[in-house]
Length: 315
Ligand code: MEV
Image (cartoon, rainbow, N blue to C red; front, top):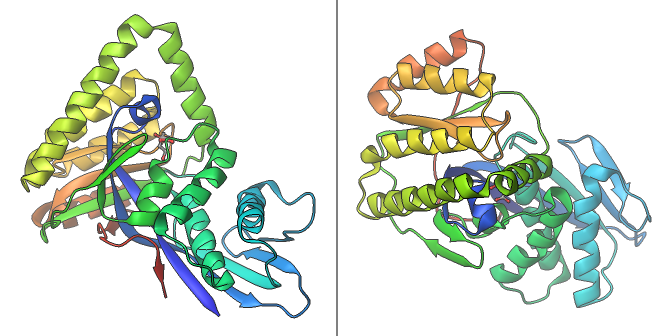
């Protein structure tokens, strides 16, 4: 049996702006999507998603919508490498679905990586990334490619369309990322389109917001490179205000953000497409218990995640 695991992500700065060519900073975190593939004598190509509770035969013309990205990956690999012997692929994931943690990209990356290993062909991580990006296009319409890139390569990444730079710094022991899922699911592709349409309607104003986002991300990058993580808090809050102005902030996520700030968070913002999904906050060790308690009290299930250096791995 061949198994691969690919990490989730938290976008620290710059989501949405990255769709229009501005930079963003993202980190891989320690939640994983895993795919295990075993050979099937019958020659069939079966796929089972435990998290989505769905299964399909990838050779069928129509597969359930949520599994279409895996059929796309299977077809790309078939076109590029030729006939694939029969298999059963089982996909499982700890990453909340449709919440902004890159669940679809991580499942695509883990499936692609394990299928290429199953085939026994030579490949580079770049190939995995490119194939997973094709699958992302099916799910999100106009993805920037940030999600599949971080899930493939891991670490903290400064990302622009067509450019990525790993920020080689050690995350401080006493600093935590707290993630809260608002529980409100939304369609990333739809939110991205709405933001782009708002941009078109008010370009003369919006272009300044996009430039501000770019300057903010570049400032955050310099702070991270000089290990001044504790100074990121205000930039996180400013980034949140920019997200508010492009129309992706809602009452429920604001409530979580204010609870995080009031309980000692250095900064907190939406991460991912917004209009629900997750919020992340940056916390020093000494305010963590207070924050967890407060967030639980208002009905949420905070999780503490850690940045991870590696992207997709064999396991
Ligand atoms: C989604 O994780 C992040 C967005 O910026 C969309 C994208 O970059 O493709 C909202």
